Image (cartoon, rainbow, N blue to C red):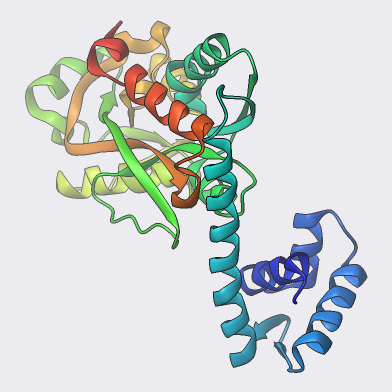
Length: 301
């Protein structure tokens, strides 16, 4: 019978393509990864990888084995969830990933309530943006993740993952006093000639800025960059430009900067989890708790 740990290494190599990346993921040396995969090839009796430039690709035999590995891991987690469901109390450790602006409104209240209602349960909160959180859920590094996707972008989840919608976080325009009233009356077109504040190129939020401005008929002149929405709001507050950000990300001290919502623009916030873990009591309880906290009357309070 094949060793499940070696099968997992092969699966991770299929996704990350280098021995170095796999070794960093598992906290072992590159030579140890290589040795374990050589042993697996001897057990299988077939070549499982081939080198293409600087990366390793799976052979047909390797792809077949990885496909079965995914099914095996799913079956094992389903078994763990089913056994956990037989317990009288919710215990153990639940790891909850969250992006920064959902931490205060969702993750921390959920963690506190879950542990208060279930004394035998520990909830660990991890700060991860969705682009990192979704792979972490799939790799079983975290149990569930609060994630988002922008309303104008299609979202495809890896096989074996599901996401439950919680609420819409509308995009809003932040503007200094001189532009705020015009923007309330005319929308984004009123600030087409303004300087803009945005995240670095490649960040998820920059896509929302470019899309919103394109829909309003212009390309923004980005003069300032900030790695946080709070930083963008601070720059706007000093009169240096305008910014489009998710409403939930606006700190209380900067909410007076909100000029208007962006037409047809929002972040759809949800909770992502492995389908095989849904019967696990801690996971099910966490999803129910997030659903409760995300209810409109709770978010408004």
